[in-house]
Length: 399
Image 1 (cartoon, rainbow, N blue to C red):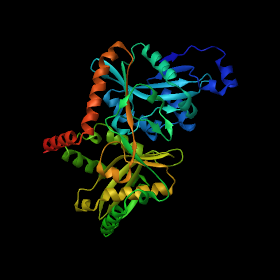
Image 2: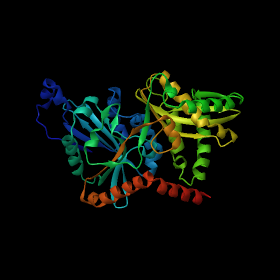
Image 3: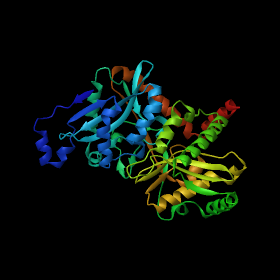
Image 4: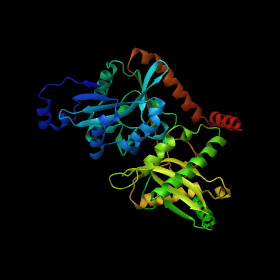
């Protein structure tokens, strides 16, 4: 599918003479096939596009192949080009039927903590709300297209750059993020001396276990072993809390295994696996996705054995933050959502927002319900008494 903007035929010459003109949107295309969008996606990645590591082509194509396609999601990749035919931005969306409506969301679903389109860096700073509204207007005229855009979990800023989509009407997400900006001191820069002391005492007890160590998975055997332990432990944890285990959904294990085995151009893994092990068991596991700016934890779990009392998850976090500081990573997060352990390390809030945009008359009918549902979810999660009641009900249901 293709939607064209009507610009003068001499736009290419104008762009050559005026660099700012090269950032004007000359054409927009919508691809329902990842393979057709891949060359433009890869081009933006090679040019250091402004985005998060969750929008890498390799990650989202693996997710779509194993998970999205099984859910009936069809790629809906919106690409804007300049007059020279180079991509200015790419919105990695997927559309699906929700009752009588067709809704487009970011690919990756709950497995992507942060959602941002891919933008050429100079375009992210210069394209304004009128340009974006122009793209939306042309999407609305696409025959048989999408009724509603539902774009969740978008950070207001990333790497010091404001999110262009934040210029549109939006509302706060149900949950916020938080991060840690790193320096050479690592975890010691943020964890209180009392907490540091407690963790050192706990780790000395774990260190008595045979073959105790902190590791990052370095070969295929390590990857498979740590993922097998993760899936088994996570299933028990989720069941005990009365939560739906998203990692048990069809295709998810295949997606994470493929992505963990894939390598980036520089040889690093697409998903890094970090773990503590000792005494013949995996004590804690974190899966993380990383770029030069951010180390972002995607998933985690820890042992249910007697060793759990020594807080292996917190000790593993301390090791991971230290490793990130050593290699010069600028920022670290433990995913989106509230949890007390996250506040020990990541104290800097990252506000998140959702954008709901109706593209058709049918979408305008659905718009108030979407907005109200997600506003109510945020209200519940922001009120300790309400949220505690929900968690108690879940635990009771699990029993």
